[in-house]
Every structure is written in C-alpha cells, then in structure tokens.
Image (cartoon, one colour):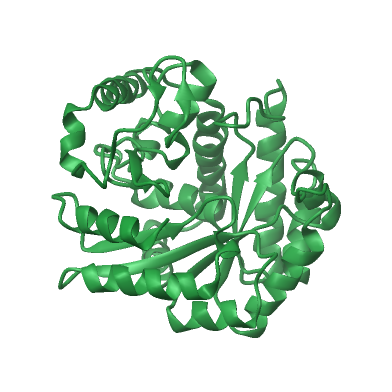
Length: 360
C-alpha cells in the first residue's frame, strides 16, 4: 500500500462514526515482513499522526516468521507489536502444507524466527491449523509446544473458504476425532503444569462462565466492527476473508474505495446491501434453530457463504466443531472439576478465573 493511499485510508477510518476507543491494526496479507522495517516505521508514523486524542492504536503482525531477524525483533519491541506466527506443529506436520514457491518446507526457517522472538523477549502466539492428519496427534502437538516453550496457541481448523475450495475435515467422523483431540490436549494441559494458553479452550470456558447468552456479540456479523482494506484502498467489512472475493451470488465483494468513498457511504452500495441483508437473515436463522446461538451470536458469514453458497444460512463445519463441540467439552470439564465443590467455593473459583482472564 502506497503511503498516500494509507494516509487517506486512515483519515477515512478515524473520521468515521464507527471508530471505537481502540483501533487495532492487523498487518496481514501473504507475508507482511516481505516489506522492510523502514516501510512500517513510516506507516506507523502516518497512523499515529492521524490518531484522534483518546484513541489507542494497537498493531498486530501475522507472519510465517521465515524472514524475521534482529531488526524485526527490535522493531516489534519498540512499538509493542503483537505478533502471531503461523506454524502447524513439528516439521512432518507443518511441511505437509506450509511450503514455499519452490516446494520446500518452511519449518526450519519459521523455527529460526520463533527462536529470535524468544531471544528478544518478544511476546507472540502461534496459529496452528488442524487438518485431518493432525487431529490424531494431540500428544505430539502438545509435546512440541512444550519442548519449544511456546506458551500461547490458537488452533484454526482447515476451512472451506476463499481460495481453499475444500477441507480435509469434511468427513463423517470429524466431530468424534475433534472432541478426542481436545479431550487429550486438555488432559495434558491440566496435568503438565506448563503455562500454556489455548484460545479455543479459553473461549469455550469463558462462554460457559461469562457469555451474555441473551445478547451475544459477534463482530463478524456487525457492519464496520472490522474494516478490511486492500493495497488499492478497496474495502469490505464483516469477515476479512471476503475482501475482493468473486462469488456467484454476490459478485465481487468490494463495498467501496476509501480514496473516493467514506465508510458510511457504503450503506448505499448494492453489493453491501444485499450481503448485509443476507448476513442478518443468517443470524436470524441461527437464533431460531440453534441452541448454541448465545455462545457465538450467529457464526461466521464467510463459512456460511463458502460451505452453503449463501450468507442467509446457518450451520457450518466451524459451528459444529469450534462452537458446539468445544462448548460441550467445556461444560463437561467444568462439571467434572466442580462436581464435589460447594457453591461458595465455585463462586470463588469463578472470580479467580475472571481475574486471570483479565490479567492475560
């Protein structure tokens, strides 16, 4: 993205009626560290100069880690950048899918990047994609993260979405194997004493204890809760995976261009109107038909579109696994943990859990 485009994009975003007290900027693409540190020093300065008084700006990089060096680590520290590293586990698992343009595995270079982050005390989490091959390897993955002192893990499932026309998880036994995976992983987590945060387990536990089941929030179905912008200034909202995708039902999912349009002008865009109408219809269908609606608030529109062909639909593979199966597992873990505890102690433990969550 050229700096002139960035200035205009940031100007339109911070002047919109949708700006919250924190503006979280996620640098994501193919690989954001292909550009040099100097580019981001200037980009951060442009964003900071446009930041309204009282608004906090946070930056996140999602990287495969293969290009990280000392300079990158110093930059991340200097600007308190949150860093996510994509790695699916040990080399034999990671290099099945994560290869470079020459067909070579990326594991060794990604691990070099992770070791650099650790040496510089840069806080980071990893995103590991679960495929059919890795669902049977909960112990292997847990031991890998412990061995390499990786303390924060997010598990994505392999999704049918965008440029990925099918998922290896579309088979009849997937829910049983998914539950087995997280049952084993949680058991290892509980018995090891290793300080290890797992997003999916944390989300499910918070859903059990803290979700407002009557009024669930879902940023993926709320217009302008997130704004996704490409290098030319074209933008969309809802799920980032939708930006610029050509679809049979909706055409190309671009709702405007921030060089010419304001965010609020998008309400008159025909593609946005149709997409938003169907997304809200999908939320209504979820609310009417799904007993887990209070946990997720209507699912992810991108999953609905690519699995069901329309936003105006309900259950997806993501729902069945990440929402339904994980919530069931969390309920089981909580019941087992507190089955012999008196109510006053349960409340004390709930308070402790909330305090720990807020600290993290």
